[in-house]
Image 1 (cartoon, rainbow, N blue to C red):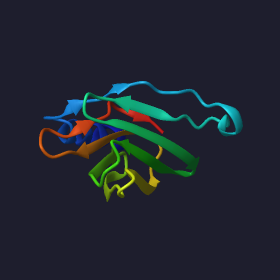
Image 2 (image 1 turned 120 degrees about the vertical axis):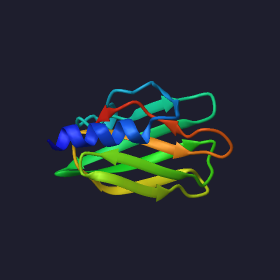
Image 3 (image 1 turned 60 degrees about the vertical axis):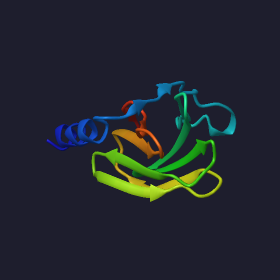
Length: 119
């Protein structure tokens, strides 16, 4: 039931958006403990997300070009809204493990969203 609700929230949140293409990097080096760095690219924005998993998941993200943007993360436990800083960094402190999408609201034009990915 929770996954079904999360998927419905994700479909609603990404209804009219530019979808970024996945270019996920496998875990490497000292961070090769199972955490992956997810990279998504669109013509207007690059979204990088690095989850740290310990029960719930912390999402650290970086946006290029680096500007303050409103960011929405839709996960199994609900919708999380944050704003990136002037360097394009954002953090969502606690997200339930499972499928998520990240949507970045850019003016002008439609928001840019990642496809669903698991954390």
